[in-house]
Image (cartoon, rainbow, N blue to C red; front, side):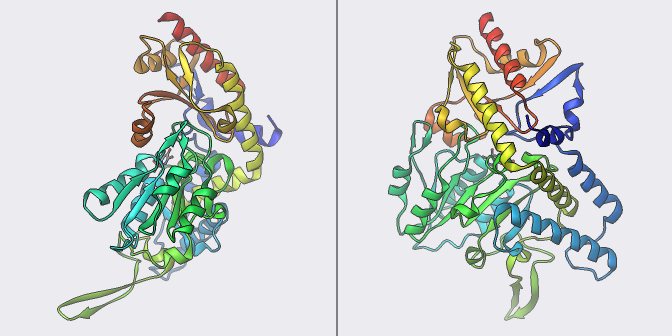
Length: 415
Ligand SMILES: Cc1ncc(COP(=O)(O)O)c(C=O)c1O
């Protein structure tokens, strides 16, 4: 592990905690990463030293200081996602919030009302569009899965002149690896549709989102890269942002309201202002900016190299273990940050295995994620309804993967 990464890793205090006297081996960063001290400090400092009105509503000096920090956080996020301007960054509480906003603000028309999803979409992406489809407002198409990967030819066949939006996850939270967003963006563009990329699993270890790959919109969650819970952003390219109709509206989103006949007419602000209704998570944004800065200092290329080598090492150790199937192809998986395995041995119980990892390993508590991973489309398309997912971030070591594999072998030997 290089020196920059080990210095970074000393800044995740939860790693030093004991749970029931056991040392934590945290292999669940795909759910949420442990939190960086600098991010927590930045949030706390913001709350205690500023903590006043933001959003340009009030004209006093404290409000100006809050607004300036918010602006500075937006600039950091804009750089991270690859936005041409901070105006294209909408703060959200994470990807779920971002996609609900996008789906409900999107300018569907009767002639263009179809949404094509990859079969790997998390419920955070699938369900907001599924609801619109159930209400008769759009038609939903789901691309096929081939060898646990998005079948790009199959996706291209679904994209037509009626397609308004194509959504792909940049890295699956179930099967790992990464997805060719460029190819999907070119298919979407060819039909005059927009492309959204879910960067929840991609951004933390690649240090960027898909704006540079041709995505018109993309989103990430700050809590998956060491920033506070309930932080994240939606990037929307200016050309699309102008067409969105603000969905969640309220204070701070309008230029003015006038009387119009018997009712009223609201004129919404352009750029991100029209979408960030009410008081925002200013302290969370400060924490998010601090986390991004710290990870950048450690070096995203180094984080990526480290995580790729952990995935490769885990695959090597898992190779040949009878009783489980490692999902996906090695050459794809090393571009991601996780490995999923499907139990094959009779009697394998996911709840029992979790209990075993919690309680039966000497001095260690191994935290992994099991189940459908909130990705019902992936489960329905693949038939894998319960996998064990081991996911990595900068603070993991090969020894962590080894402890997991030894635990797995011991559990299998009991069946
Ligand atoms: C691929 C993917 N997309 C979206 C989400 C939802 O993210 P959040 O809960 O931060 O909104 C997750 C969460 O695990 C995810 O893995």
